[in-house]
Length: 336
Image (cartoon, rainbow, N blue to C red; front, side, top):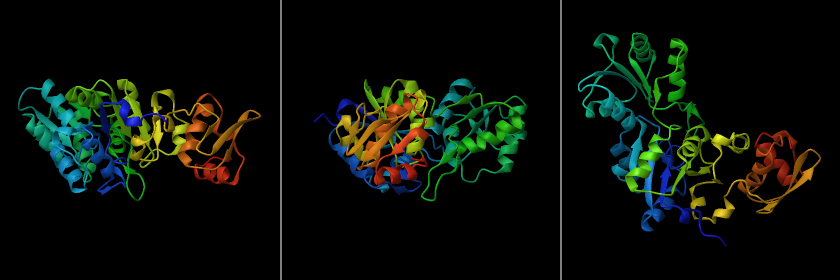
């Protein structure tokens, strides 16, 4: 049996929403996984696009959930965006903040002046997720950008995971300004930009980091862009059909049902499976497509199917050869 997946890496960089917790509730098994990594001396970092909390607040939230965390392990898009603005602007410069109080605090801590209105003559706009962001904030930001202010987005996540299903994320609010202004932000700081991942590796001196995330368009694409291996967990936004349809720039090295996959043998999570059988499932050629037979864990069937589908077999040409396979494919929205 091969070594555990995590044994091949010297740093694990976790996304938060959809990996460690959903909004404010821990995902089962996440706290135990992080506790084990800490006990074994594995370096850990948390990299989040959510700009509504500061690093210390994130660490406090995690600790309250039973997940070991310290502020110096947390990297947020809010902090990174504020630091970028401080590098580019003179001390005390006015920055129009669209987002939560945490983003205002990060801007202020960098020696800049957070403002809310065009009348305050902002030289930049920084836009991050905030549950109370409304039309007035977006209108002031649109006027400022149209007047020449630099526009920085902390991230462009279209949705946020929640127990009730995906909710509008900062990317949806960025789209409002994009439509109104007919232009893109000048800079997007958070994932899929590789900056947060590279900063995490630099902080710990890592030479072989592993990114763990639930989104192909942020976590996984960012890891690919940073040249890092990644583990996709299926506890958040991305589902099996999304993974099958993923372009090369959004394909993880591994997939698992949840973060417990870190402690399984690497060859039980690697993508694609590189075999015709895995975990009780079997693939065979079926005309121009493939047939899935057998029964077992859904993630093993997914690993098998990624091989032919990524090589060009249409997902609609996957056939079910057993009742269990038929039920599984139907749950993924595939005809079977």
